[in-house]
Length: 394
Image (spheres, rainbow, N blue to C red):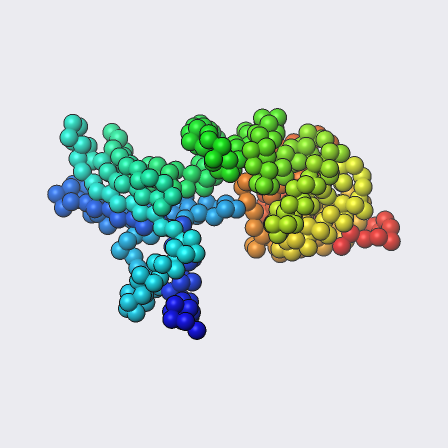
């Protein structure tokens, strides 16, 4: 083995590469400085930095199919970094990380007082490996608490470094507050930023999230238009086509679902996108159930369970099918399985069929899927089990 391969193998064996690959891939290193004369009337620099990082981590922890950057202080050293320094392999580690596309952005900032109004402000320079450096200046508002100021500054930085996950975070905040103004404004800014065809992937992702926001606002027609635009912008991004098919179910256009989904399902198999395959088969099952083709619905649910054995939605929808066919025992068995899968089931906000109920009954309103609440409800007294055919829904 040549010396470089030996060093790489050695670093991997001791976690120098593998640890940093997880913690530093698309990571953000933060360093904020607070002069002593300012900290007396506010808070120490370490506290301010912790508040800033905590907000960035809160945004970064938002559930998303694409993940998000990890955030750390430059003062906090990882195990891999410590071992690399001890073994004098910092340059080798950096070279390997660069080779494997592991990028680290930096946020270096300092606190000062505004010369005109004397207000505390954070002046920072953000460096992203893929973009030119850009400055961020955040001034404390009248009556604003320090945590709110730092949270606002952190969100502004994350909007530059991780715009997609920041949109998802803003959507969740909008749901809690029942006010979509902020997320609408953020989406508008990002669509303007990604107006060039060069950024078609980024633009398509934001358009898909704009469609999800429209669904949250109970505007399925607008959502359908945005999903179609996202699909045309980047056909390789499969979310928009799955989401457009979901709107078809909502609009009782279930007969078009199977044909419309076919190209996306073929692409998902090629990409080995198992979560999306499961989501697509759930939609197919819903469309078959809506038209009374129960045997085909069973086959689609079998496919969905094959792609995602931990799904709670598959046995839940299967239980509805069992109930529709009068098989109470089957329904209860699948409800029990759905409850057992809840803790390990992964959902993603950008996939409508994983967030909302599958609308397979005519005129069924659009509403979020809350399996934990639905499956936690005590069951009403059930009639004696009925076997309707020799074919059972497992």
